[in-house]
Length: 188
Ligand SMILES: [Zn+2]
Ligand SMILES: [Zn+2]
Image (cartoon, rainbow, N blue to C red):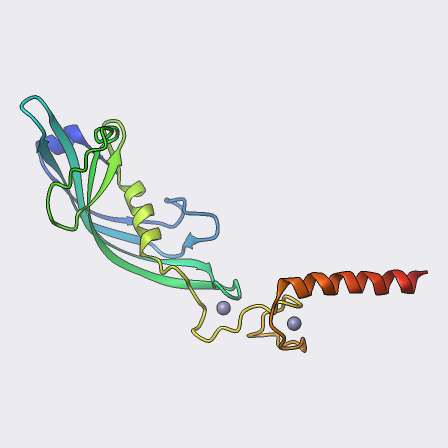
């Protein structure tokens, strides 16, 4: 769905969309596992920057809900994460702030983005908002034990007998060297 400036010049657009998985491409490690529901309004906001200069900003206010699947930060097992957020964003034509002057038009918490050409794709807005709404670190459970630094097994489901030694990568490297030395001795 695209909001064009020409269309918004006429009237605000209310939307209530349900996007199936795979409509939006996310980053590689994550995927949408249910419909993405987004409802809100897009309208045009005209900034008068001088007698000759009027900047047409697109404002999008909406709520979104979906479910995303992404790897646990510790054990890499897939985790389904609910996303439920609201946003209020202002998009200016790209390049219009190239003079570097900071123009926060209101004291509100409206965030500023940019649109290219004649308008803005709702899908682009939603992709970014879904990614922003996800927690910085997703865990399959608060006490996920993660992967064993020695043997790589999932310590939640496949406990191993590796020493509970601190997982220092220098040790691992040293052990690899020792192992090689042992192997070459065995061979000869
Ligand atoms: Zn985990
Ligand atoms: Zn292990």
